[in-house]
Image (tube, rainbow, N blue to C red; front, side):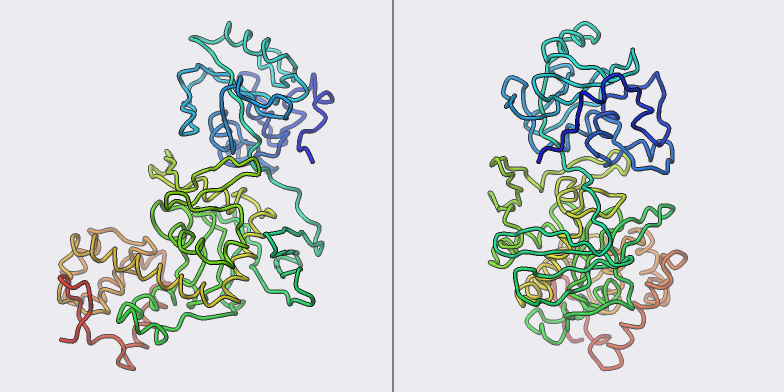
Length: 476
């Protein structure tokens, strides 16, 4: 079913007819704003964020919408029988291979349908329509330089929310799931299995002041399989360091999902986040795509040249490991991967919940899920010690408890290298390390100390020391 509304009915309307967040400035370029309201494109940066509004936001930046399109190209290469987005901008400002448009002031866009481009005419402050040739000619005259038309297929929208208790179903190549909302609790089940039980996915959370939106699992709701360090003697003493941070993150629950924070999606006992390039959740997905159950859960994902790709119905492949620069945070993220798992950052949408259902079911039912989680977390932790921590700090000969605290500080991101270095020079190193970030993370630190003390009491920690040349822990 097409997402394109009756565009003829929108002709002549002012932006105030679409935006409930009062972004109606007649001096602003509302082309992206109009398109986003019409197609429910509310990813950042949107009008709700811009004016601290209360209604559903709509993206207001042309180049950001371009980057979210599953497929882009020159207009002459477009299938003009389909409904598309059309962009007009200086031709040398677009890098099609990287799906990137420069953020220059002179750019515009509209919706192409039935041979016409419907767009917001900023000088007349209303919706108009033109042929593609007329559209290009108009902006060739208005803008400096040589303009060109580009097409984009529709980005994922904020799908219509299901009514409470009404199931939403999705098929995954033989595995069929449905999810439903009851109060603030989301549940999922395998609907292709007769009388399959429901399982809890998470509690819906919305705390805009803390920038928290999505699914979470409060500790009192935890259930399901647990990572047990004693079951993984094959990875030696690293099993206890993984346990300590895993206990702080999830009480070591292998099925835990969190979609609330800036990572947009985290999963597992170690809470692998989706946003970090060459690290964490993307590494788990690389390994998981070799698992038969996982392939049936995510049949639209493939490994190509060792990287995770999304394959659209038309065969177009999107590299989910492509790094996208986040200018606001001054860091690179896996934006395509994040948006694949959780398309809408500021509300709970069906794709986000269905992806949670797939992963929670996999963790609940598959021993391979547990094995891969532990193998991935172990690889990450050992690599960080070998390639980062031994260069940053003099760790050779340090107790495993000290190393566990340092690993947890960096895993959570609650302290800097300088703070750790200063703590390592203190008379009581463990106490100094545990004091890092206490103002904002007192509960996390208390849990960390409690878990380390538990292992120390039974002799599992506190007696071995790190040996840098081996990247292992040995007895004194």
